[in-house]
Image (cartoon, rainbow, N blue to C red; front, side, top):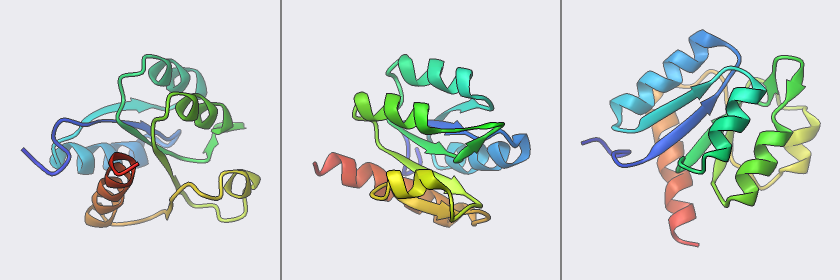
Length: 123
């Protein structure tokens, strides 16, 4: 079992190839991955309350991920942004949320998710 064994991670990205790469990296580390490519699917997954953490692209189609952030926060599910944007208003609104810039390597991605889960466990 990898370092993320036993965890379920929600990956929200409207770019299927990027989501696939993130999914593979997390799966290789032992995580169970739930993938969503649109806002409604992501909100459904978040509402189930069965994810340990989430990785969110900020821009999902024509919308941003603010509703997903709110849903996850209300359930105390830790999340991080994985984005190519550094100027989005959401980054200012959720300034305390860890942000990882696209593109990144698999090892760095997994290390950031491990840190996110460790920080949540220590609270």
